[in-house]
Every structure is written in structure tokens, then in C-alpha cells.
Amino acid sequence: MAADRVSGDEQRAGLRAALRHADLTLEQLWLRYFQLGGNADLLDLEAHLDGLVGLPDGDGDLLAVVVNERLDELVAARRVPYSRPLRAPRPTTGPLAALLQLLDAARNAPPDRLVPLAARAGRVLGIEVAVHVVDHEQRRLIRLPGDGLPPTDPVAVDGTLPGRVFRSMHLLPSEAGGLRRLWVPLLDGADRVGVLEARVPTVSDLEDPALREQCWWLASLVAHLLVSMGLYGDALERTRRGRPRSPSAELVWAQLPPLTAATDSFVLAGLLEPSADVGGDAFDYALSEDTVSMTVFDAMGHGLGAGLMVAASLAAARSARRDGRGIHDQARAVDEVVAATFPDSAFVTGVLAELDVGSGRLRYVRAGHPPPLLLRDGRVVKELTGAGRVPFGIGTTGFAVSEEVLEPGDWLVLYTDGVTEARDATGRWFGEHRLAEFLARAAAAGQPPPETVRRLMRAVLDHQGGKLQDDASILLACWAAR
Image 1 (spheres, rainbow, N blue to C red):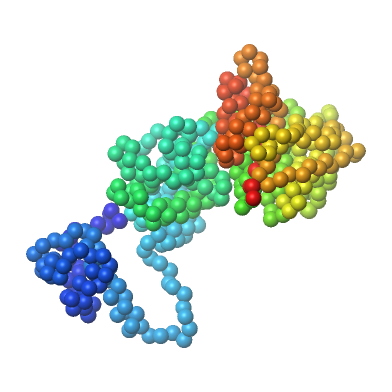
Image 2: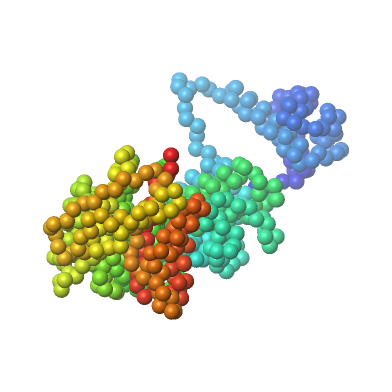
């Protein structure tokens, strides 16, 4: 570690002191050193130990390895045996110790202490750590305070190297600005939280596979702690907000699942806009070994009234689904809660869908809502119009559950009309055709669902000049090809 670096003289003194206990002749020391790849001959080694010449740092480290391994052999040989094999003790140094220290310390820490704890774990690994979280619009990466490093401005997700790491979910090295850094995605499962900046001591560290792997471990734990600890305070959440949220947006976002989730065969990604003022749109999903459930709702009206209605609809559908009831009963539960709770002919449009992964059979109810799109082989092949019915809350009987057969590799896209009805300055809609073209290009290019959803929402916002007149939401499901 950079903070613990010792000089050649200090290392040589430690080596001479340890040799007094290592029970190695000079010849035995040189032979072991040579077997590890050492280049110095026996005379050079003797001169080095006598302080007459100095060996390169790499050779000094090889000698340290030889003597330390020999000391371990001697200690092990003198240990009292146990009656049965024992597990290894808890490590006190190295990468696992760093992760365990972070995990233990985070257990009783407030959310705003996470960054100092992560920075301390980084120092155990010999790196300096900074944590950058993405804002809810997924446009900027904002550094959380508390790492002890000089402050920096937020960076854009588009057009920057840290943003590329966030978009691609791949680790990348950088020497920009004279700083040697590894940029590592912060992923909580499949959900993109931000990026971890790891400043390393030397250029060679940028290509060190072991250090890269250790940074991945640290980033995974930090991302998980960001999400889990964020529930207990406001500091982390406040950083991710570009502007204050309306009460309706606060209510809706509190009901949403993570924006991205995945299994070994499925990826789901969703997004809502306008992030800070959404009212009546929401989505939900549930993954299991055998089924994938998907839901999109759009409540009538705007503001807090629409937010309350869509939150109640989500609660009704979830309650029925978690009780083990099927799509038909889930739809009736939504009908009943909307009709009983919200007067004056209030309604919610939406789609409830459930895929049986073993057979590919998709069962769905579409209630006054835009039909989902089915993409296959990189193009839109079908709109799932099915047996459409009236919106939820208007009628509770007389509807059927539609079916469709999906194949591995298919994309299924559920969206609200705020996507297609976004208008530019001339009044032109974003439209179904433009939506289908956008999705086809993304699928053909192999673009992952989370990045497809992010770019689509940006395109919709840009089409309407950055400000939507209606909520827009999308839920994209990708079944991994065989």
C-alpha cells in the first residue's frame, strides 16, 4: 500500500532480522529466491544483505516472500494439533479484511457515514476511493461528500469516461488530468447506482488484475450499502435529486421497485419522467424461477390525486399477486379498489402481464392502455392488442385474459401514452412509429435494456423541448436468447 511503503534500507534491515529466525543458509535463501524468478546471483545477494549494493524493489520483495514463507513453515510445524480441522480465522489484512471492516462498520452507521467508511476500506487496499451516484434523471454523476479528496463538479453520463463506465457497466482505467484511476460501475444486482472512482498509486496498478477484481468487490458492496442504507436517511437521496420533488412524485417513487432487475435469463428495466413531478404513472414487476410478472399503470388526471390512485392500484395488484392469485383476479382487485376509493368515474389504464418462462406463454390484461410491443430479431413484429377492455375502475366483469407465445431473445415493451404523445414545438407527436424504430435500432445494436430505456426517455424529453406535458413511463423486458 502506498501509505505503508518502506525504503530499501528498511526492508533490508527487516530481512536480516527475520533471517535470524528463518533457519536458512545463504545458499538455501538464494535457491528459493531463484526458483521464484530472482535475477541476482549468490554474490549479489550476499552483498545486498551486507548493505554493499542494493537490489531492485522487485528482487527485494521476492526475498521477503521467501523469508516470510519460511517463517510460516516454521510456525506451522510448531503448532499444537487439533482433534479436527478448524476454519481459517478472520483475516486482519488484505481485501477480505477491507470488505469485512466496511460491512461491520456500516451496520450501525447513519447513511451519510458510508463514504468515509468506503474510503477507509479503500485505504486498506492501497487506493483512494470516491463514490459518484447517478441522479434520478440518469444524466449526471454526482460525487458524495466525505472521502477527504478535493471537491469535483458533477460529470455528465453522456460524453465522459465515467459516464461510459456507467452506461456500459464495464471497468475502465484512466490517466486523465495526471490522475491514475480505475472507474468501476456501482451495481446493486443489475441496478445501476453510479460509479466508484479508485485512485491507484502507480501506472502498473491500472492493469493489475488482482486489484481490478478487488475494486469490483468493493464497488459491489458499496452499491449494495448505498441502496440499503439509503432507506434510513435522506442524505444519499438528497444528492440524487436535481430539483425538489412534488408530493405526488414522492409518493409514486416510494412505490417503485428498483429501476433494473435481472436473472440469468431475464432483464427488466423501467423509467419514469418527469422524475420530479410524475403523478399518475407507475410500473411494477416480480421475478421468479418460473414466472415474470409485469405491470404498467396510468391514472387519470395529474398531481397528488393521480398519484394516490396509481399507488392504490399498485397496492391492489401486488396484494393479489403476492397472495398467489392470477392475472384475472389481479385485474379485478384493481377494479375494486379504484371504484370503491375514488368517486366520480375515476379510472386507471394499464397492462397486467405474466410470462411462464418454461413455455413462453404470456397472459395479459390490457385495460384502455396502449398495446405492448413485441420485438423479435431486432424488429417490432407485433402489437399485443389482445382482447382489450375498459380501464380499471369502470367495470369489474366481462373481460378476458389474452395470450401470446414469446420466444427466448424477444423484447416486450410496456409503456404509457406520455411516450408516444410527446409533442415538439410544431405539434408533431413522438408517435408509435418513432418508438418502434428507436427500439428496433437499440435491439439490433445489442444495446442493454437499462441503457435503451435511459436513451429512449432522453429522446422523448428532447422531442418535447425538455419538459413533458404528461407523465411518460416505460418497462422493457428482455428474455435472454438461448
